[in-house]
Length: 457
Image (cartoon, rainbow, N blue to C red; front, side, top):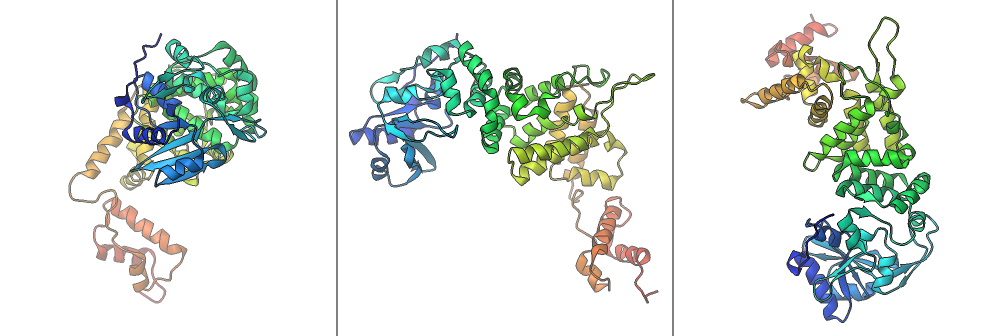
């Protein structure tokens, strides 16, 4: 049983109160609705403040200087006050959902009818800070106290209207550590295959919220148990039951390992989406590269699982329409997560190049979580941390030293521009990082000796 707290006007964002008061002063009904009411009852701080009203979009826009019609066809206007925005939506009833995402049409309604078209009871409550207080037509408060996610009305109808609600049910249950009500759960399982009709970017965004808003490990298990994971990320579902060598992974199979890592994500403050996805996907190459221990060997092997996994990441990113930047970052986290085993033996130049990779800090955090969720050894993590501290101390720019020679210097020296330039400049930097070249004069001499110019002796 959840202990809910009473909501008072002082709990409400000042800008939201101003929107409510201005609408009411013009003779309209206006109240808070949805997630902000739920979060206030739970004692949390809402991230968004949504307002429901009987005012038409045009009437709302006439009352405020700065507005954006974000969904005027559905009666939705964004009101801008200062640096904040408040979504103001007309009470409405919805027509049939022919595309599995949006109703074909909407019609004005009263507050009860508006509540009855919403997804889950815990999101269907209103709060009027200027008069009636909590208004609950769908018994959302009772379900909130009981820790239940329950569809409003017939759950099969709610999921048929918008298949993304299956993922939303998992997200709310995972984030708040709630159970999904039995009838709602049965309808969700039956509707799971319809998630394939939902656009990749909507699925991606909902999954990202599951991984980063809290309860990621619980969400992952619930996605598998409902069949949703097998539909949206079959590559991840395939990790279940794939054994690992016990000397390195006493925690269990690949699925159990990744589940522990996702639980570690929950302990981070605002984990980046790319880190969360990197943690989830870094070992997806293990099922297709699994080689059981052969005769006379006790070792299970996953040869090249990092490279195979990186290729699989590209496929997932294309399917879920990730941005190129995020795809590249998650690809790099997967492709390079095994490089730490060699850091102690790397030449100085190679190690420094590794430390200064754009993705390195996220990769290092992934490595820490990886180790803590398996063998528990953090020596290579601490080694890298120490090297980072060393390169950050003192006046020398160790990670990115001032180059001894530039492409312009090579042109002046008589070298023809072309692919060789890059090779020469990289070689000079390697020698500089290794400490074998320290001056511009020495660099010029070394280049002339290694790449002599025709007719120059």
